[in-house]
Length: 218
Image 1: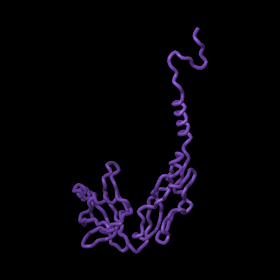
Image 2: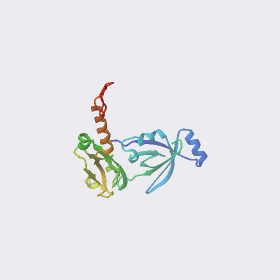
Image 3: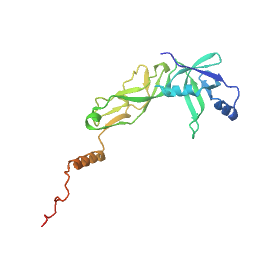
Image 4: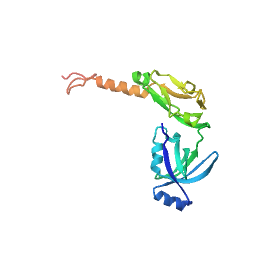
């Protein structure tokens, strides 16, 4: 799959006023840095960043950033946003060496519907949403997928049970950590359902009829 390429421009002016004017012109200030890479101040189109962040790999997307007359493999290391308007204020890009392992947080994705949920109304509780792992950037999985189809109420999945290629990926999360469980329906939910069933089954009494404990009219 071809790697995404994003164009950037070198920044020559710095400071709050310069950055404010840059954002007003529809650009976001940023910086590129990394191992054996001299820091470079750049600006990018925020639409390109939104496209990356909303892709399947999100923050873990490795793409090629063009600046000067070169292209560098990078990923978005940090974003600064306005706490009120959520406007993107600044972006940090980490230069990536494709032959050097890095640490990533990879999201967990469930596949299918658990039998305990489908048949008995159980609840899937996703306890851990991301797994901490180390690998080469080119071996980074988009998600760690867990097939829950056969899980019954009371079943759980731990980190050590995850299906990953351990030849390429080293999981750093605690192997005994529970990733997800299938919990029984809550007692309140069961009680509410029983109450509704009882109310639906109770016969309606016509006006003037007897109720339990009443006396017949003389």
